Image (cartoon, rainbow, N blue to C red; front, side):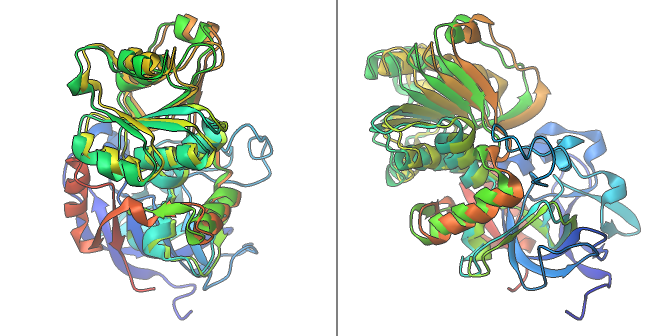
Length: 580
């Protein structure tokens, strides 16, 4: 292209300081250096993690920065040493790298990479590595991606090549939320066929989790949310039952326990609330319940009674749905194209151009629609992979997804894909339940409808607790609830929601009892391998993406998109950054 090797001036949404609206500025994007790829962002979703950094994280060293980490675009140019990509390739940026060489990438038990962004910081790319400049000042690249820009630069190990036939305004959601929720159910929780799942939180991630539970074969997918308006949407994704905690005078876990003869097999927390996390855990049936934490939060301690795990439950976390990013995202895109995964809307790449090391870029099928597969760069892959890769949801199992945002919904989708029998969606917003049903949730629980902890509700619903729970809220209280909702003996709890403001606490007995408490970054996907696979899955209609998308806007409307997410009025908003 004529711009190769030159500095590109483009529009980007710059966050100058915390708790302030982002500003559309003209920035300079430097040419890609060795092993880097410069990408023209076509579409991006707005993920709650972006809002978290801007309004909740309050990290003094994280500004100014260009947010966004759920996008899709076209390779504009490549730097020296890049052999995996070439101009014109359709790709999805990855916030989780996959160098394929480090001990982490070579280990099938994790989707993290020692050589990527996450190895040094959970907030932004190091200042010295940023390729952005605005008004003479260096601007940080959020999570190493920065998709709220018309262009961005990334290491090739954090980029996934996808099918060029995929609609970018839909698969962009696979970059985070959808993959996160779906994978949380399928990869992390490993929902089994015929199982009972409970998904807490029916946001995009929660709905994806419901979809994952359904895909996994869950027989019952209980969607839990305090917003009843979400139930119908959850139904579309596969939820079979709905529970609003506010409708009960007992803890949600007790409600679920009563509904499932002791607790659900799997519970996925897609809210990012530490209280809900614990409820999700306690909603799992003892002996084998698995709780996957998908919702992001780091403001409070993550705690739970040790006996919850000693009893056999597993408390696991799911990052990006447990997907190996470069492998998983292309597969998710393929699944979407094959109509095996519903379409979502929710990504966040805030610049027309960006620069990244080639190890942080995944080459994807050029047929993939960038405005859709961009979601695979974070949320969708994170939630989906958390269920599929991290929790390793098994067929016939019971899952509970806490938080039904994009990540939670992706986790639900992952649970379904993994064959979960029951996928219980948990959220305080009942409006999310119907969406969760679309992604596979079989049951729904709104903690506010009960006068007992959500974990007790789920335990009653599933005869002791769920097999898998995914926390997709990022709230330490919800994380604990998610852990305690897992059944003792084999329950697995996967933490997917992001937060670093508070300690994550729990009673040791929760694990001693046999539970597993795990974290899932980018759904456990080896980024460069997982993202292309997720894209492929989307293209093959095996992964949903369109259903995550509730709003479409332009980059200039980024603040409106942020407000929608801030007030829980959307699952995923995809921003049109520049023409494809």
